[in-house]
Each structure stands twice: as structure tokens, then as C-alpha cells.
Length: 226
Ligand code: CTP
Ligand code: CA
Image 1 (cartoon, rainbow, N blue to C red):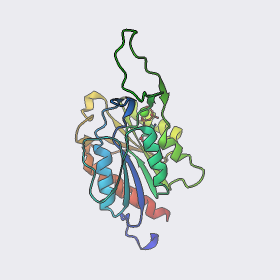
Image 2: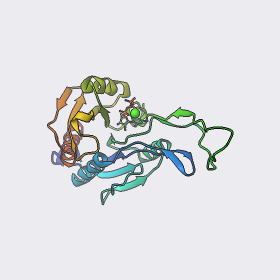
Image 3: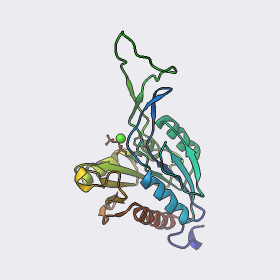
Image 4: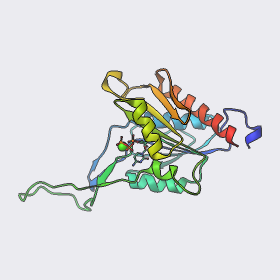
């Protein structure tokens, strides 16, 4: 491909996208979750597909319907998401939009916990694998482009720049989710793209438009590499 591909085209490229929340089981009927809607990840998968990419869409439990024409891998927990990501490799780009739970219950019960007069249950936590970091730091087979996301409430550029270096990814798509912005749970996003070129602030726009712009940027970047 490469030379003949139009700029902005992702034809022939395989791209994985993680999206949505994860659910961490407590017992067979209970879990710990977060508020991710999966909207930005879903929009991205759609935009990448529209540019011609073969998209592997690895999604936690979200209410939003995945786009048509992508390979959907539905997972529940962070551990399952990590396994699905490993199974999807190799890819030309990995886009990690999921809100992965940082912790899981250390020993989830295989039976429903019952109320007891002996007292309240105590949950112990274990840290989940950092999927983005693991993929970013692969010694062999690292995707040529690795993109992480960061939702921050304060010092967005500073926090996201540090996060990019800590993870070892190429870009961080940072957004300000402080309550004053009204971003959280809405249709719009205000993005700052952090790369080795520094911080690029995008105007506030719809999540679909953010996705289109990111997909175009991914295309030009991949096509300039090979
Ligand atoms: N991520 C991941 N696996 C995890 C945690 C996070 O792949 N176990 C990815 C997310 O999909 C996102 C990026 O890492 O692309 C940043 O997530 P974030 O929660 O902001 O980073 P953390 O390192 O967990 O830092 P924090 O303590 O701020 O939550
Ligand atoms: Ca986190």
C-alpha cells in the first residue's frame, strides 16, 4: 500500500479500538463499573471504518450500539479486555478509548454474597493491568501508532503530557471533564492532542467531528510512515 494510498485513506490498515467501561465482578450478580458511555470510542471506530480501515472494536458493556461493518469483541472486565487486545494484534494502530477500571475485586466470589449477622463484606482490590502501557512498551510487534486518552479535571496539559511519557504511547487525546465544561456525558468534546510535537488545542466540537479529525490524522500519520 503506502505510496498509492490517497492521503487520508486507511484502506488496508488494521486498527484496534478499545471503548466503553469495564465491569469488575464482585460476585455472579454484582459488579463495580464507571460512567463511560462509550460514545467517543464508538464514534472513532465508525470514523476509522469510514476511512476504509479494518476495525477491531473491543468494547466493555455500553448501552450504545457498535457501528456496522467492524469486528466487535464484547468483553466485561479489564482482564478480558487485555486478552482481547493481545488477540487482536498485530495492528497498524491501537486506539485506547476505553475507561478501564483501575482496580478489580481481588478474589471475586463464585457464589452470591449473602447478608450475614457476622458483619459486612469487605472487598479487597487488586490493580488491573495497564493495557495501554503494556502495548506501548512492547519490545516486539508494537503497533506503529499507539493512541491513549486522558480525561482530566485539572492541569490538563501538564497531567496528560506526564501521562503520555509514563505510558510510552505516541499521542494522548486529552479532554477537560471538569464540571464547569459540561463535557462529561454530553455530545461534545474539547480535546487537546498531546504528541512529541507538544499540545494542540482543538476547538470544542461534536464527538463525531472529533472522531473524523482523529481518523484523518491517524491516516496521514500512518501514510507518512510507510
Ligand atoms: N488504560 C488502559 N488500561 C488501564 C487503565 C487505563 O489501557 N488499566 C488506558 C485508557 O484506555 C486511556 C489511558 O490508559 O487510554 C489513560 O487512562 P487513565 O485512566 O487516564 O490513566 P491512568 O494511568 O489509569 O491514570 P489515573 O490514575 O489518572 O486514572
Ligand atoms: Ca484510570
